[in-house]
Amino acid sequence: MGNIRNNSTDHDLHDQVQRALAAHPELREAEIRVGTANGFVHLAGKVSSLSVYLLIERIVKDIPGIKSVINRIEAPGAPSPSRSIHLSPQKSEVLNPSTKESEK
Amino acid sequence: MTFSSALSRLAHFESLPDEVKESLEKIAVRRTFSADQVIYLEGEAADFVYLLEKGWVRAIRLSRKGREQAMLVLRAVDLFGDIALFTTGFYPGTVIALEECLVWALPSSGLLEILDRYPHLSQAFARHLAFRILHHLQLVEDLSLHSVEARLARTLARYAEEREGQWVVPRRPWATYDAMAIRLGTVRDVLSRALKNLEGKGFLRVEKQQIVLLQKEELAEYEE
View (tube, rainbow over the protein chains, first blue to last red):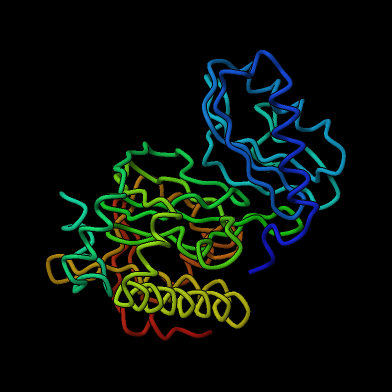
């Protein structure tokens, strides 16, 4: 296995994600769980709507230094949290409901 | 089922003294997860170790290039989340419920205190983790030394169950071709071809609800 959270980058990213989400009044009630490893941000939890799901994704995506966001948050109309993830090696992307199966 | 009776069904933990089981039971919290729910995330602080009482879960991990690899598929009764407790304190992979699961969550801080008091429990964890290392060695060997066809053959033999005098691998709702392909480090088309090849060679028969292994021992040692 590779190193998990053994560097300050992942630790810092985690703090930045938590701070960015906490700064949004709309997300105060949301229980979002965050994991960071090797520059990837993993998200889980449950929100009431797809718009909140996408808002969280946008907020996290805007944080500098993040390779990609793996959004496994549960929301009406959102993709299954258990879907398989295959990111393009060249892209730093956020998986969202418009991501086609063949692109994952 | 109580926590102690679930623990009594777990290899290496079944013969722990009652005092140890009672100490663990005091801190254990019962939780349920429905199919597809995330139990914990890769890189998340490892606040709990989990005892799986009912159901199946899978552990996945993202490579540095963003490709998912299945690490483990666990069925009850088993333990997970314990690697993080003894290493970095952060989960090394994401664990997702494959169907409705009942788990007992043991807070890491409380568990470490109990471990300090009872060497029997430490030994049980050491044995459990040693077998987990063997599993991962097997996975490394499978991925690096064997073809997809051989990996598939060996995996099917490993997960086979004896039913009415024959060895079968039941097709569970979550065992899609995509999920199986990830487990074997390949893609759906290659997996499908490998399955057809093995069927064509007479090693197995693919049925709607199950895969019947006609030559289980040969599949377990299969090499191209």
